[in-house]
Length: 221
Length: 413
Ligand code: SF4
Ligand code: SF4
Image (cartoon, rainbow over all chains, first blue to last red; front, side, top):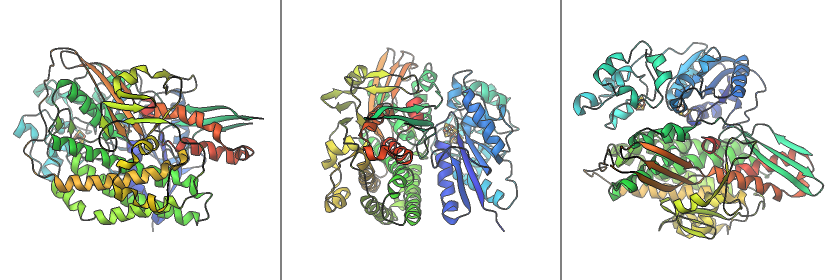
């Protein structure tokens, strides 16, 4: 037996790239009748008017109004998923110091999907689990592991490029290395790894992380 | 009577509408923008120019390729390191994939529901059909973007100087096998859209486009009302004003609001669309009468884009070189600019780059800053019978804003 889910989407300071990815991932479920959209920025009416099984929140918190909305959203959703680099690490706007808070600084988060943008398969994984009443597993794999699995030659070894792969979350199918460039860390730090050894090898490594600096340092220790 | 939509749905970003209706009709109209400022232009200062395309794309999840391509083009032109012809052509194809992605999302899921409502069709069935169409077309064009530039949202294969790597030709060419089905689906969408009852208001608004030989896409020249020439000249003369109720500015030319996007592109250069993209329009005797007809033109542009993508992918094959090297430190200050047709209209970028290659100043003006001013002025054309009830007034004012497919995150950035 699967449960039909009522899904909501909230947008804070962000670009809608994660929400658009969620829209693509959800369309087949909506057409099948397994998912019903509640308040949902971009796709439907964003006004909150009920309670929801799952709530995706994209973006970082940049205004008091957004902080209030996020709290309201939390009260209405059973399972809160923070999506994307903006929500988890501040996103590109946090290149400017002091303008963006993370979602977890304001409310309790049930699950995190890293990415800039997130990948469709990650959304499907969350929905598939929740439909069956189980919890999606926590991701911990690093990009290096993904390169090995995808048979992508290491760009640090073969080309001498700076690549944040050893410290970054996997999940993008090793996209940048597969196009011959180093990872610039858009998916953010992998839990349990540290960027320190990488910085010793290449002091510039952190400069290339676009979602970045202070906020990311917190996750990267 | 005041009619207020606190938060407008089915648009990108966080905004609302307010119209004040008096005895003589609309007295005031405002498009609120609550979207938080992210100060991306400021964040660019001090970064090396090579990082710019990856940062600017994050301004918008619906038109990221436009940002990456126009950033790269502007900087290449002023550093004198433009990539070879086939690379330019390939990036244009990636840009057109974005037209397809963005247009089909807007047409089928955001804009059409406004028009389906008053037609004679079976509403629920039509909406399901539209959603299926969007799914099929977006899946194809997103996969094509993936093959060409890594991904549709925040592409990773675009850099100043060209591309990082050759596109994944095996995936791209394999996708051509399902091209006919996707094209047929797009033509089906055109049938559906031509069958929708479209209001004859607001009237077509004059506007501008990028200027080049082909149907407008990417150039340093633009045309707007009586102006034709260098984009930087025009954009430095445009009036920018930020109303107190909006986090996004408004752009005007000689005090006038103007439109950017599919309507001015088609009105000026519709004859340059591929003839296969115009066939159905001819048969239906279509000429645009109102801004709501933008829905039809978006589908025509989508079909045009699909055909262009197919030909580019079919004709380009293995080349050795996929980019040029640009000087890391230009040695002197440079001013760079270019204008691209993002799905919603001209996106203009200007950068001042220091002798060390770092950005001193960046100015990025997306189409929505012009279109918001246009939408506010269009409100006065709502027919008076629709202003009698709150429900119809809300519907009409929301439609006027959606005609422009506003991208509020871009406008605020
Ligand atoms: S994480 Fe990236 S894709 Fe997602 S909203 Fe933020 S900038 Fe956009
Ligand atoms: S920057 Fe890193 S995490 Fe982001 S797409 Fe590239 S390889 Fe993946």
